[in-house]
Amino acid sequence: MNRWLNTLRNQSPAMKATWLAAVVLAAFVLVGPAAYCLGGFTAVVAAAVAAALCLAGTLIALLAAHFLRGPNLAVPALLVSMTSRMGIPLAFGLAFHLRGGPLAEIGLLYYLLVFYPVALAVETGLSLPPEKGCGTVPPPVHSVEHPLPNSTPE
Image 1 (cartoon, helix red, strand yellow):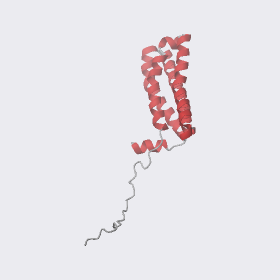
Image 2 (image 1 turned 90 degrees about the vertical axis):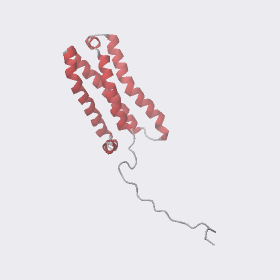
Image 3 (image 1 turned 180 degrees about the vertical axis):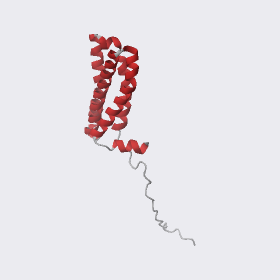
Image 4 (image 1 turned 30 degrees about the horizontal axis):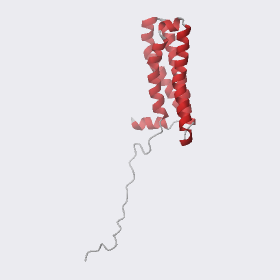
């Protein structure tokens, strides 16, 4: 599994974004029927909106982590990633909730709580740098013995 994750981490940003979207879509496919049973079509729409908001925030964070690499850009990358990852779902979820309406009544914020950890875990795993030498055997170390001066037996 570690080698598979390392392979994903070495992919292009577009491929990482595709994997992230695929996992969020898979989570929506699992949550959708339960949402329909709980609240009908409106609940499925609320789940879709929540999945889209979480996906949008994590896609921006994933791209920020890719393009803002390096020791001088660590803090800006962290701020952009954290703000987008949490700010987009939270701001839009709060706006929907305070405005009211069918999405707020059916529980959009609860669906955000379902999709946020999924998107966060996948985006974090894809944003980490690959481990160096993961899954490979290190080359043998050849030691050269140097006699110490004055260490000959008398």
